[in-house]
Length: 270
Image (cartoon, rainbow, N blue to C red; front, side, top):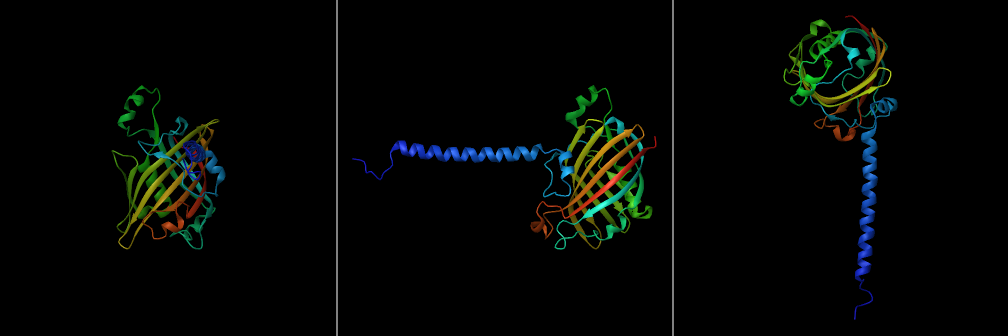
């Protein structure tokens, strides 16, 4: 005779079924949460600024960032830093944050240009060949040098070199045996109605000088709005994240330690 305290096979089956059902429901909740996170648009992210608690979920950066056709050409840019925030201050403040206050509400002028793609990854060769329109990308070497000169002065910038085989890697050579090594690791883009374009990139940066070595990650999220054939208005947000090598990384995690918001006016030159 079976002991009454020993569960029957039916009872065991019901117990296991309930446990599996609970696990299944938890998995559904997690999948739903993950899907919502991944589905969050770049436009939503801009709307949520400055309430950024983590990095955006982006695809691996391959090839180059493609811009809309209406951004092709050379543009005169006026960039104004309109807001800067140190979300984790006073515990964590990035080097140079206080100095950057000097740029608040100051217009900085430089040129940028966008043209035909210089590098097409192998997986894009066929589609690029079939395309009726050329792919528009940023001239990263030209733009990087012009922007660096505007903020640091012509005498402090020697050269910006972009890897000819990978547009996501570049080196900025600075005066005093200093250099900034940048590698774009993640990217996202959205083409919206009414000639609006949003793009974001995550860049790993290594600043090297004879005195120090500094690593971080930078998110640049930009929203461009075509006003007419010769004018573009843009909002750009730069977020600074600590790298895993930073001793304060575990205190910050994936939260930004510095946020900068810029307004840009682009006027077409050619």
